[in-house]
Length: 370
Image 1 (spheres, helix red, strand yellow):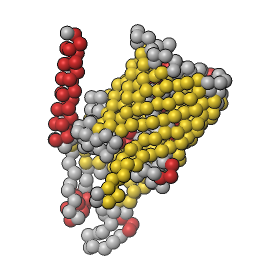
Image 2 (cartoon, helix red, strand yellow):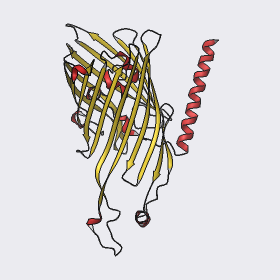
Image 3 (cartoon, one colour):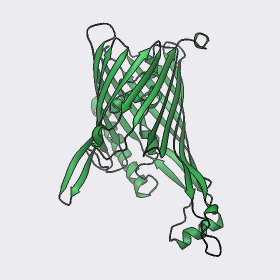
Image 4 (cartoon, one colour):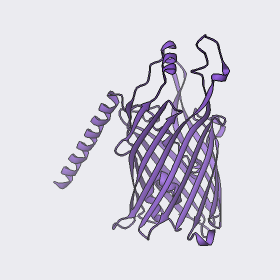
């Protein structure tokens, strides 16, 4: 009887969620790819494994992938950073994270993400009142997205189970013309029934992330929009709908201490309608991430992964399935780890690709590292 009630409650929850997602999309306040800069991924170790890391993540990059994993950190403090360029250097992506163990059961963390394009020419004032082109009237501006994240993790009474959460403050700006402030919550869990097996869950934008947009256009810019046939933007609310990441990792030690091979399979489930992914539906779509890591004596790490499955239209009657392969490596010495990833071998997918480097430092006291 109890099992039947739980099943009914679960089905009711899924039905209610589907209805909510459908209403949000119909009203146009939940567009696809909202806040997509938060879905790129952080850490060259993760990118080298095809972003299949929601279960096997450790250190301060767990602030992004699965905050619950912070409780497993072996160091008191952990700092990580990453910088990468996309589109031949036009776009910059930066991440920095800091985590600390409060005690054996609790951990806290802060992280920051910026994704932006700088030095964009503003040509709305290119033509003066007499209709002459004046290049001196061109100014430069930046279009950038920022995320400030505050994370918490705690081990529960159930052996091997940890939970975590992140509060996100979002700021998006397009020069002086437009800006948005938003807020959202992430929830996560990590279950480690044995030393070899981990199961992770990450619910991003669990309550939907709200972005409130406001626009500030001077009269000259409004006139340019009108003459060129562009619609004037208006203040409004944008929702980022929930995204679910589920993953399982198996890690097999061998040979000398600290040597192992670990494989992980993740499922990334979006809720904003049909997407061009492996399994597409409405409102749920699913794409897998597959990753493999080989570690030798906890000194050298070799990685590979596959992600971003998409169908590309070759002609009117034919679609081909593409995917994004990646490789990477890392070295660890006295608590300092440098990781590298190449995120699209042979340009086999339509995704943006780059050489990515990240740095991570772990230590137990500030005094001994200053």
